[in-house]
Amino acid sequence: MKLHSIIVALSAAILTSTAIAGGNHADDHGEADATGQPGKATKVNRIVTVDMSDTMRFEPASIAVKQGETIKFIVKNSGKIKHEMVLGTEKELTEHYEVMKKNPEMEHADANQVTVQPGKSGEIIWQFTKAGKIDFACLQPGHYDAGMKGAVNVSGTAMKAEGHTTVSAQDKIDDIKTAQATQSADMTDGEIRKIDKDNKKITIKHGEIKNLDMPGMTMVFRVKDTTMLDKLKTGDKVRFTAEKSDGSLVVTDIQPGR
Image (cartoon, rainbow, N blue to C red; front, side):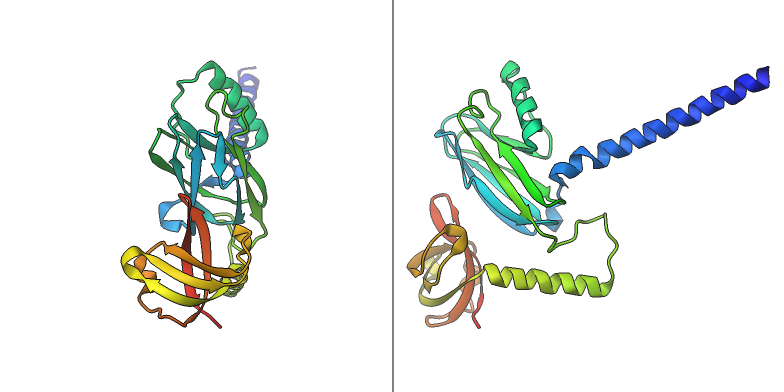
């Protein structure tokens, strides 16, 4: 009788341990995988600047990334009241917003969100491990209802997420070639007309800049880093990428043209 009781107790313990292990695994890879996972500062692929204003809007409100990319979001508050950026599914954001309305002074510490005081900036480093649409919003009371929302559109499998796939050396080479080809396709052709290193500016006659919805013309851009100008001269053919930051158009990468 005693032996039977011991066997039953051991069986129950084993089943309980298995259930707990299974539950933890789901917590670690279920909800987190829906939007991605915290990224590492040493693995950042790209920096994206997001501005939050008192018009209850994000700029930009639509951001395109590739699956596997780790993005460092520089989140700026150009308004006079507190704002925040929170990444999540629409369901998660809606549920969180209801909690925020009841507890407006909540302080966030999760990796997928940052609260920014007026005139200040913060950052989120996030790796997007699955293709699809990831929402973001300001969950300060009243802001979400006013339409302070946006989306990150994660496309394709140009990059492999860390920690989930074992790849061969050839796979890695193929990935690099694919990423380079994709980057090249996203770049804009141009010709340098003027370089003003002292003021961190460059004038480029360029073709269509698709991500800015801008037709071909000649424009003055700021540069992200003056070292980008060191090997350039007037008349050079180049390929470049640009984005809007703090109301200015900024060249974020520039390479010799073909």
